[in-house]
Length: 387
Image (cartoon, one colour):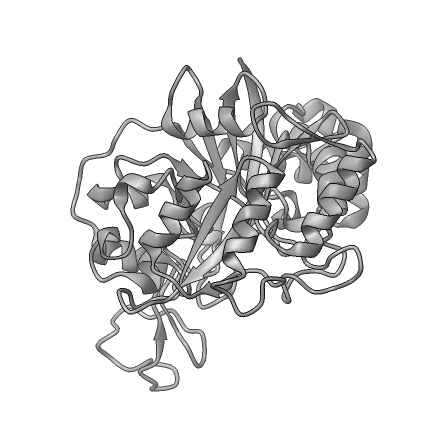
């Protein structure tokens, strides 16, 4: 068994021809650039590209296969240049008569053939098959059945964010209002929550948690990720790990301290001030319009003091969040250690101070140990590291 790093939620900004897929995504966020960045810069073993249903993305995948840069694996997934496994995924938005919505979900398929079948089916239920995160005009349970029919995995995405998520907007009390609980393979937590917070909700205890970047730019890849114990980096091995079968498992979740997330605290929608009592007007601007924070929403839904035995959730801070690490320092670190994973997980303080100031080196070590102090974020603004 091997320890492997995976980020399973990465968007395509543009196709090879320049056509928009995720409109809010960076223009250089192409499939090939994602795979090269994961391999040469981030140090990931597995990437989930969740706009693989888009026809031009499929075309680029097939071109890479023809050039032997991508090779389809016997157990699902595609190996890029013998180093990084691509898992084909699709993020979709559910909003039907049976839920408040909108709710984002992640669907993963094992092969290009299965993804092409899924894309063809989706084209009958979407307005624009070329774009990311499109609203699908069918019920959540029907989507689940179709994914399972094709041998896929189904994961509700960033389930607590105030917008476009299962608990943020989608349900009043239970995921059963929208989904078949037996056809969910894992739960994606999102940037403003962690394992302990989520486990306040008893119906989630049965599921594995995943932590992913939801990257809209190359730099944001692997700002959250997980370490997984696998025999090989393939779709089938990932499926085993999500179920905790055959010795495969999530070893650790690496995510932002929830206070660094953009929606941790409840804030005034007008002026951004932190709100303590939603029954009172904003003390700063007197408005009653608030963006409910993830922490408050989870408290509202929590019904359990029991915490299941889970892998550790490590409050990992991306290098770009750390004061003192600008573009030049970042490049120095990559030149010395090869990848971000090496800097974050294996570099020693003595090695770090050889190339960067001691103060910055100590921040990297503190981030690794979860010892940094942070100022909470909210209302769409990230939290900050306290120095």
